Length: 443
Image 1 (cartoon, rainbow, N blue to C red):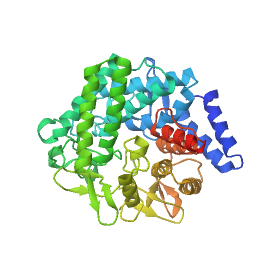
Image 2: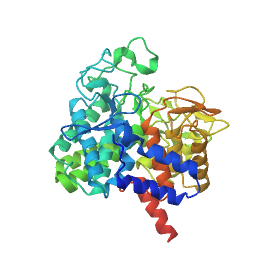
Image 3: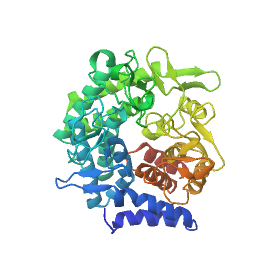
């Protein structure tokens, strides 16, 4: 974006260097990864909005873009220009959601790029229309954390109200996908994970309080439509939305709508998305259909089951979460891999035995064990493939073999993990509250 780095960002880079004064490799990696989103993916528009590409794909994913800019909220606390840039991202999110709340990725202009031949309601503004719950969660999370970090409320306005109303309408429709949803999606001549069965309707589900998702945050089709980590995320951001409706908009009825839907989804999770595992005990499942069929796994992409406390759905030491975590970080999770250079979670989206840097970052930010954090840090330093950047997935036995050499989301997650090791986290986030709790206990 620019060759001159803002002083507020340089301060954070210097802070990490001071915290790790003798780790030249880590400092070089952090500096490169931290500035990557700012220098290569953000473009300010003439109307004040900010368009953010995901890296090697020239489209803006609602999820990726929100996650990519999240650590910059630390700089925005004292830097008005960074804050303006981030508010531009939020306003761009609003515009895209109001254009089509079922789309996950958008073009910078109505240029007709992307997957225009998909059998769904495409427009020239849409790059891809894979409906994912988290695409609507991330913009709400960013809007909330931006408020907590900067104190600004200019983005919590009438447009924001329309966005909330739009999201609630979609999530309510998708609580009964079979009868109330008009969303369909098919892509021809592709692997099964890139399209939906039953003429684009997806697998059959039975209403249970949770809201349906066509695709996972990996952009792979759900096996069963109630994607549990995404529903957990929805519970969290509906709480955020209710708080913003209450304290800024003074809109009591919209607040009540948010809280009612939040309660219904949470009750659905707790009733239909848990089981008593013979080895791990009471734990959460990854997907469910409402009729008893469940999927026991986790995917590297966030929201994941591993990320539940990072998202704020439950405490870091919640017993059901810890049981689930034990399952996820074991060979019983079909996408947990062990290799010469790292152990961690991958994804069916990438080759077998490929671990994701995003999953390692989440593992590091959801453990309360210091030794585990240091182990994760060592994994990062040994698996950059000699590039000083993070990647999508890497071969656990040969990190020089990786997917996506320009993947800004992974660089951001690594940066956030390193900052957390130095005691820094985004204000208002569960990670921030956990770090503050740790500091008070130490004092």
